[in-house]
Image (tube, rainbow, N blue to C red; front, side, top):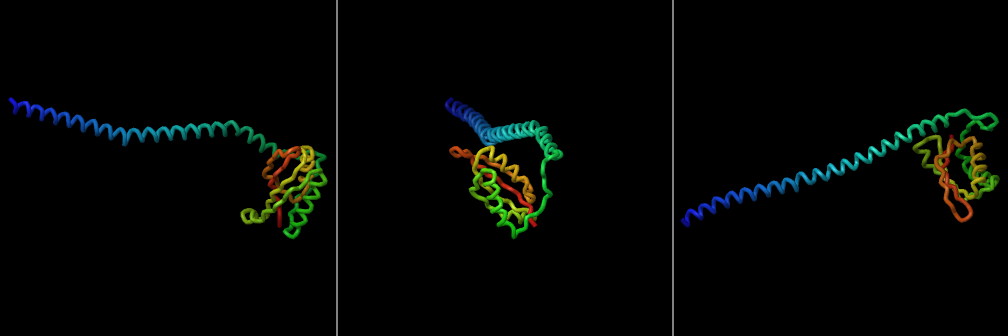
Length: 180
């Protein structure tokens, strides 16, 4: 009898051992395969949502962009004095700085700094960029921009940043100048 009980227990422990190993294999499979796969799916879903938001933004901004590009191509109104574009000679670059200072004073602005970046001409031959900082009021800045557009070698204004400082505003601009 005792032998039969021992054999019976041994048979059941083998079954219990197989069941326990099965659970361990399932747990390892879950922890090593399913759980990381779910995490990666979550990251993919988040990335998809981000991309969908970007696409939605672009869809909303596309008509505005199209409208602005059409406005950019608009015909210049009569009575507006636009000079023919010319190129600034490298030797006249010093004169540009002094002329720019006179332009700021003429419009009631104050020039803080102007920094020509000659390295930009390496990537874009025929152009020089200039970082400028001027202070003054919005109304003076409007007049300043109108006078600035009269410069025949000004290709375009890339960026304008406005910073409030006490009673004055500081205007940081990046200008592209056509050069020979």
